[in-house]
Length: 348
Image 1 (tube, rainbow, N blue to C red):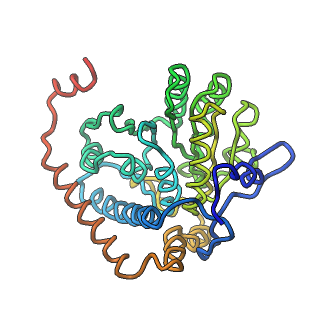
Image 2: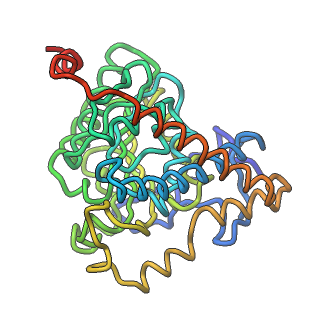
Image 3: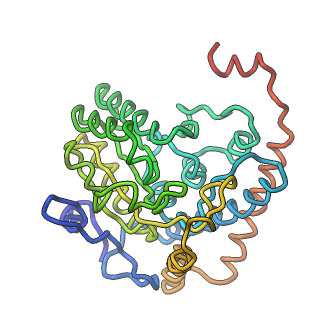
C-alpha cells in the first residue's frame, strides 16, 4: 500500500513524541528489507537511483579515507552506516531548497547539485568554490550546530517573502546539546520558519555517547518546548527517511510549521580521520549496528522487486569509482588560489 500525502499525518502520529511517552521510530522496511505494509509513491527508477547514491556514498568514503592517508585531502568525516539517512533526505528536497550541512553530508550535497570536484577542492584546503544560492548547498559548517541558526534564518526569510522554499539544517546528535541549536528551535517556533532541522543521531558526539549528552529520551522531543513538531524515524531505512523528510519539508513549505526530525542511525567508522574510535566505542556495539547496515537492507528490498541484481551492483560500484577518481584528478589540477582570490571570494 502506498503512503499518500493525505494519509501520512495519521501514519506518522505514532512516531511523534509527546509528554505522554516515547514513540517507536517510523519505518517502512524491516531489518531484512521486507516492506511492512506501506511504501512511498516512488517509481522504480527513483528507487534504483536512491540505492545508487548509497553505493556512491560508500565508495566515496572508502576513497576519501585512502586519499587522506596519502596526504591528498585533509581531515575526512566518514559517513559509513549513515547513507540511508542522507539519501532519504536528499531525495525529499526540491530545487530551490537550501541545505546547511555539517562535515558528514557529502551524499546529500552531491544529490542537490554540488559538483564532486568542488567538494574535493574544499577538502584539499581551497575555498568553497560553489555558488550556494545557485546550488542550494551552503558551505560545510565546522562549528557544531551553527548551521541550525542559518537554516532557521533562511526559513524565516522564505516565510516573510512568501517563497515556497525550505531551509534545512543537517546536524549530529551532539549539536542538539549546543545553545545555538536550542536558539534555532526557539526562533523557528516563534516565527513559524519554513525550516526542517534534520538530526542524524549516530549515537556518538566524537567520544561522548548519546547517553552522556542529554537526559531526553529522544532528541525529537526537544522541539516540544519550542512549539516545533518532532518525528522519530529509523535512520537506516532509506524509504522511511524519505517519507518523513518529504512530509516535514512540504509541511514547512506550506507554512504549517517547522519540523525537527531525528533519524536513528549509527556511526560505524571514526568521527573523522583525526580520531581513533577504538579507544571509546565498544566493539560489540559496532558489530551490532554493522548487522543493520542500510545498504544490504535496501538492496534486498530492490532485489525482491526484481529491480536489482549483481550486475547492477557491479556497475554502480564501477561508475561511482570512476566518477570519484575523475573528480579528485580535476581537484588536484586546480591551482592554489592567491591571497587576492581568497579576498575576492570572501567579498572583500
